[in-house]
Image (cartoon, rainbow, N blue to C red; front, side):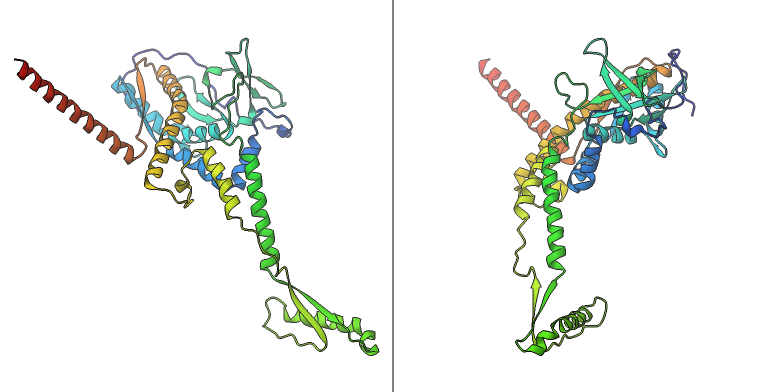
Length: 385
């Protein structure tokens, strides 16, 4: 797709045909841990607790869309085409697909690494690097970060073109390079929650699928005692035929002193509603998602729901501030490679219609207060004159 003439000669950047931070084809990659973050733990945590996975997916969707506005019209057209059609992975296209995957890795692991792949003249692909294949370390000073990629022999070495690497960390601890996952602190409460669910399943398997204890008591006469074992085997056989699954319903008829009791009928299954809700409250508080967005029908007032939505809005704004520098770097690199030196801004869409309504009401109240102020001021001037 052709556009207008370029204004400036593109900067010289060597072509990178394949990602520098891709996982190498080494048969024992799992034996060489790269990222100190508990990547596999957080991944298994999302699989084991659906509420956590749903909360992460909700945050990714609530991040929203954005537009990049350039001061140059020709550059605007080229940039829009690039952002809408850049290859991301195998079958995905567009900057939105890249941002979604990049942001999901950022909040799940705490650190996200991406890469811009070029042919020497423009960006051809955007790649989200597996965090296990990248190792971060300090450079000559604590302010410098060296990005190392894994080689086929399992060792790590600095990437050849660090200017093409995209790095973002979430809430790093003082003096730490890697970020902090929003799932930090949830493994313990999730372990308790899974124990409750597992126990409920076992109890229902034992009590729900009723089992019986059939007891045959021989009489005091000598003949009954002599054939007690044979009669017990006969009772067990007939009881098994009567309770055989899939067959017709049969009655069990026995002669003698035979008692039948349901195993576990006197036991009471513990009420799990209160402890499960307490644990879910901890998970919801950590994820920052209002309960009604996760399908948790807890009793809340309309005002409380509005306050929770406002808190979520501030959380999303904070996440957008972390992602915006990555988008700026991608756009700046694309414009530089294509010979443009114009300014641009990243403009995020409004989160919800409620935010637009509140902003409109605020502008209305502000205009009304200014009109009243001017009217009062005009009346004072007339009296003074």
